[in-house]
Length: 222
Image (tube, rainbow, N blue to C red; front, side, top):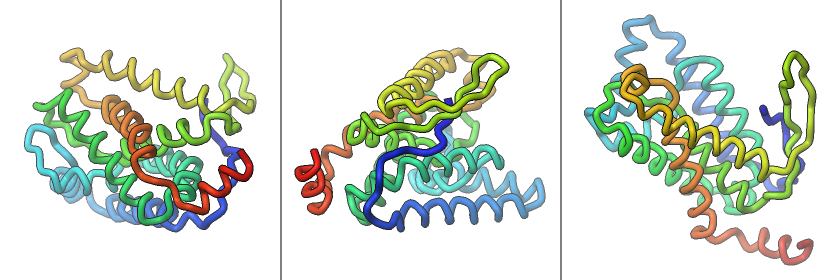
């Protein structure tokens, strides 16, 4: 299942969400402009490598991506789910929330694979946190989803909680499958970062108080 759009309205401009998307794309375009040697050096300098952990790289790695599909997929998910979470938290709290989820996501992956020398890159851990928060706050929102059934492609509207639990289950199962030594050596998707990010988003959205205007809307319409 691949999300196309959601039905949950947003009542404020997603300034932080758009800014994060623009920064990620600009950084990727810079990566893409480098020759292969400089690109590898750039990645090893700013990516998060668990075997030589540096906290600064937890932050910088959140703005690096391994390819066009990687960056576009991540930014698409952030665009769909991020505006609503920014709407209820406000711009400043949402930025804090985003980085908190990204940090927990990275540390979760490092905990499960501390000796890995494979560079970790991508915003997916932080975005997983946004998705976890979305499931808590808007479980009944409808997600227009692209669905592949054998050789056919169709669009279906599914409740957000179903799609997000399905996505989380895939990450959870993928994480434990990746615990095999062969998978760890090969690298690949940081499933445990997704798990950690998603769970932290579910937690942090209840620790950070929503904006007053959101609470008034909720009390009025809910």
